[in-house]
Length: 317
Image (cartoon, rainbow, N blue to C red; front, top):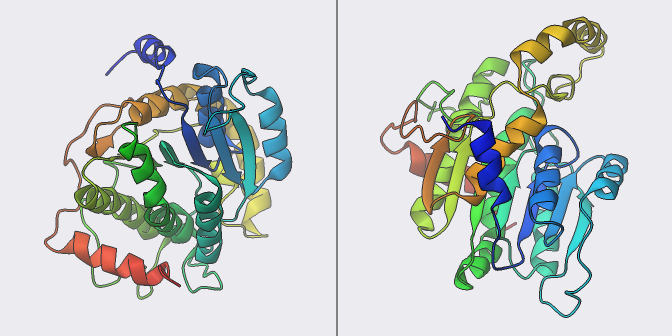
């Protein structure tokens, strides 16, 4: 396990020869927000960072605090800028629209971060597209965005630059298997199963994308227990939410003792992303490689999930 000081030192030394284009979902709170701030800080404003989220006011507040840009690249292909795109990633049509917008305006993507996610352990909540809301944000939107944005990642790689994808969820925290007879959990659903299955889906996703795109780095990482508002931003139930909020208030001192702050977590996430190696990377909360630990290695599962995901996320529609 690298020390936090060593990780910060490595991060501070990150100085790419190119101007990075960075896309971060879930960028307006928690780990996504902290990662956005780190990119601006360590690159000293020399980047084009796209913040994706649902809270426009929060995004505006974040952008005001980011490291200012140097003012000398007006003629460059990639301008130094920070911008926000509002998007609810529980719907595949929104993910497709976001990808279309990015494809039309960006020359490349060097770093794609999947941080958005609806969390909770309540029952199945289907979107208008027939997908469970939690699975939609924790897996299907990540698949669709990665699939659609692959041309921009390949453009970065063709320039000899980094092309890295980071999915922040739970590498090594699943059950090491996936229910291939009920992909999408439309037959047997529980909040716990949705969590563990989405972890396995992310494992299989990065493995299959890496198999198809060997020069690009795909990383699934576990952030650990992070003190964010994630527990309060998940599935809403008017009966449960007020009680949960009161409990959360009184539990806050304990949470600070047993959890990591988003700022500290983001240091390890940043390191895992920018120093990721081409191929599959599965890492723990400190950025250590965990290999195939708890990887769902059932025969044919990777291919079956890919085919299911293509259909479920309406690729090509």
